[in-house]
Amino acid sequence: MTDTTQLPSPAHAGQADPFPVRGMDAVVFAVGNAKQAAHYYSTAFGMRCTAYAGPETGSREAASYVLESGGARFVFTSVVKAATERGRFLAEHVAEHGDGVVDLAVEVPDVRAAYAYAVEHGATGLDEPYEVKDEHGTVMLAAIATYGQTRHTLVDRSGYDGPYLPGYAAREPITAPPARRFFQAIDHCVGNVELGRMDEWVSFYNRVMGFTNMKEFVGDDIATEYSALMSKVVADGTRKVKFPLNEPAVAKKKSQIDEYLEFYGGPGVQHIALATNDIVASVRAMRAAGVEFLDTPDSYYDTLGEWVGETRVPLEELRELKILADRDEDGYLLQIFTKPVQDRPTVFFEMIERHGSMGFGKGNFKALFEAIEREQERRGNL
Image (cartoon, rainbow, N blue to C red; front, side, top):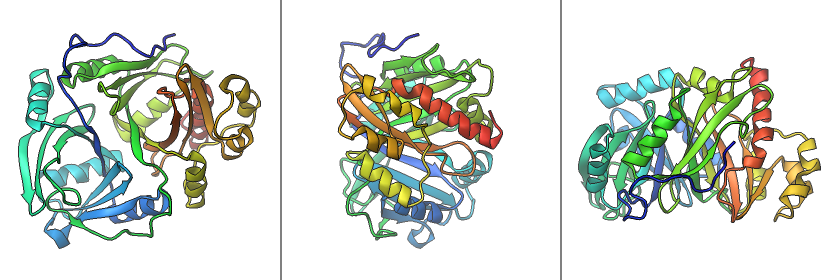
């Protein structure tokens, strides 16, 4: 069993960061109906629609809606009429995987340098560096491949003051934004990969993007009576971008990772964790808007106070809302997970409120995965 806060780092440790990043730029989804997806995330997640590209703006092939909440940005794209390779890719992606993440875009200070470093160290280049311009300025873009059909677009928008990218028009919110946003940033994005491939992709991020190993959970760390998985977390040097990577482990029954890989049709982004300053208010508002969260048995809370100690939220309110809590040497965190947000049991979300802790809720793994197993059993997939 291993749970270390700082694991061996790549050979460049102690040197200047070879792949500096500014943070997550956007999570881009390919969906069957971008207009309906944008409405759902506006109402249920309290996000504000800020930009649009589609036939009305000259994009004849696809419609895209940009939604924001604080520093978190989601882009939902669907095909209007597939006529080029991009349109065919989006249509085939939705047909094969259902609604899912196609791009974890990362903002970098120098796209050309980042792309050159990545390709030099073994990345597959998808788009060489190029500029897009309009009256608001210039954005530099490039893209590399990662697990499955997921990509990382490298973005430098320091010379741009438009709503998103050239080709996008600012637009009014779809619904009235909430008085207080439900979350303000993307905390981490989790990828699921095939059995035996996790270490390969950890090495990819170490080598290609200069990320270091932040955490790992193996052996009994993430295991129940029936299923198990292994997870390692890679992050940039500033910890602004964190990518946990999961693979299934051999167990009595099918794990949640096995279920995801089966229904998604291969590796991909499993869930996105959203940082909130008030998890109680967010969960109450999201539940009222129809978001379904995983349930946690009352027995979890009977001993919670003994090992977590005092938190900002009283124990009884955590019990009422089914919010999980965990504490480590740096502080504590509060977290809760949604059920899958589409018909396939694939992509879901996490709400997380951190108070010092930079962990991922190790103390909650057993309760969390038992909750997921109950949902798997209801679907007949355990």
